[in-house]
Length: 129
Image 1 (tube, rainbow, N blue to C red):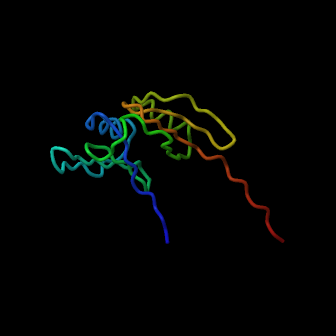
Image 2 (tube, helix red, strand yellow):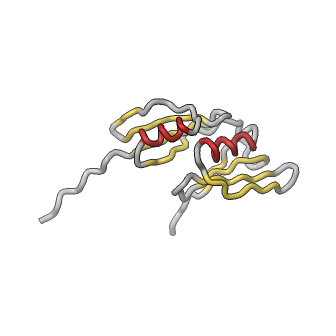
Image 3 (cartoon, rainbow, N blue to C red):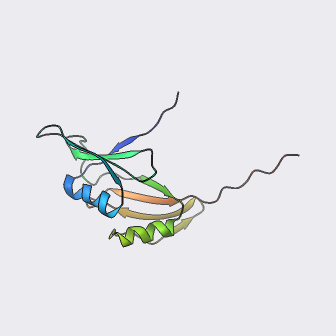
């Protein structure tokens, strides 16, 4: 059996502001924006190339806005990702390099924390004779 993570709900205080941030600034694709009732609005956004989406809205998560941490995107180049985010108006830190990859970090308008990782090159297994 396969287990696929396909949706992560993020707590936000202003749905329209968060939607604009993730689409206009970060570059996520808008999949759905559906108002179910006065108490429920569901907005689904997907990073380009990702199999996992985020959901923001009204009445979909009980957590405090800005309390999400540990959200991680993986890219081919942390430097290029940083430049793109800066060009789109996102406040993003410098590239930090670790043995497990290069990272840049940013927060959404509510303070939900994201990391963007460039994986290190994988070592090739020695050839067998």
